[in-house]
Image 1 (cartoon, one colour):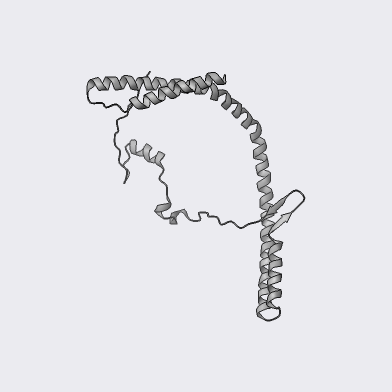
Image 2 (cartoon, one colour):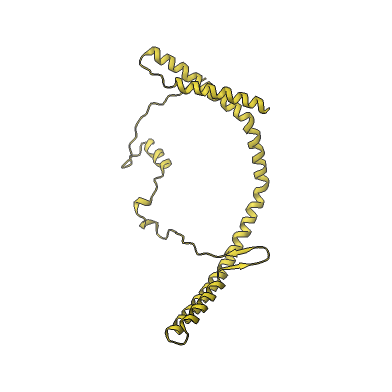
Length: 196
């Protein structure tokens, strides 16, 4: 099977190289147009043949992949829900703990400024507090915490135009349907198609 596939790939490679070389032909007359049209039809046939040969191998693989993905998808989905739920619970607790640590750090800083703590003692206590919130180590692994900056939209109407993406599907539908849209131009382009 592997040898046959390798032979087919070699034939395809040669035919594609030939097609690429001939596709640069000039069309300056009706005779050239006829030759180009014939060659384009042959390229289309080659394209279909390549697709058929490829699909002899890829279709069974894709079907097997689809079956396996469907088999595992419910478990992956459920475990993702469990993981997200637990992460939110842990995160909420950690946020509460971070707030408490921040209060303690403020207290240490005030005491150090007031001269109630030596600077080196204040630094040591601050470092000790920072270590408390860094991670949780267990026999199974470590859960670490980090602050991540994120963005969310709070008022869509205030977003500058530079950050908006045009809805090309709606624009195309409306513009081709005859609805005039400022900044949009409907134009025609010659499309070449082949039937084999």
